[in-house]
Length: 340
Ligand code: PHE
Image: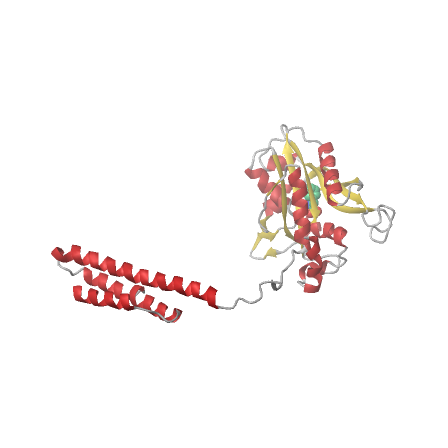
């Protein structure tokens, strides 16, 4: 075995690769999985114990020499390349290829998150495939109640308990079930409804939900929070108005309009000449909902709101046809590059 090692050692010492391929062949021969070194180490198991120490030293030495030879060549090839290959005109502009742009819905979602984070709201998410409890029952939509008709969705025939969520309010329930107040979070995400697809409706869209639960949270807190949001999102002179409304899970409930940011409230075709556009639903969390989620309504109160991101995006960028958001047409998407 010693002779064999000697012979391989001379081979390594004499080795001179002309190119990277030869170097790679050498590496495979010596250090590859089925290479010479592997064979030798296997044979080493049969070496009588009195010779083991000597042979072991020789073997390790051989392995190191092979590795060294490879390293030296590598370095030589690398320095050679940079000194001999033409690198071209380094003053030419670099072609970065095609750089994509953020989707308008993502741009607006990120802005909404930014605004609420400045007020101390954290971000959380919930599953799009929901169960009846989180999407409906815990939120005061009893089984068979007509309020469910407004939010028809997609169910699995085999198990009607599983459905695609119709709103991000389901995440409110999950948040309250799993956290103790104070809770101050927003929940962005995709929601689904069984609607005929048109320029103004789609079977899926995006919402951002907000939830604030603590001691002594009042309707005034809700109003001030939403006013701040509207001014940050649109412009400092934006006004809001709250109209009484109904949601099963908030009491009292309201719908919020902002002064139309396209005509400044004077009246235009976008706001149907009313000067106002509706942007979200909101209200004080119904005590029954707090109780369903394990929060004591005699100690805590809170508000919630939910808005459609498509709607806000529409106000920001005047996208008239909802379908464009999901068609992935480059001519549409590339127009938002500068809005990043
Ligand atoms: N979930 C309601 C909807 O989708 C919006 C909403 C959220 C209303 C929170 C009140 C409070 O229509």
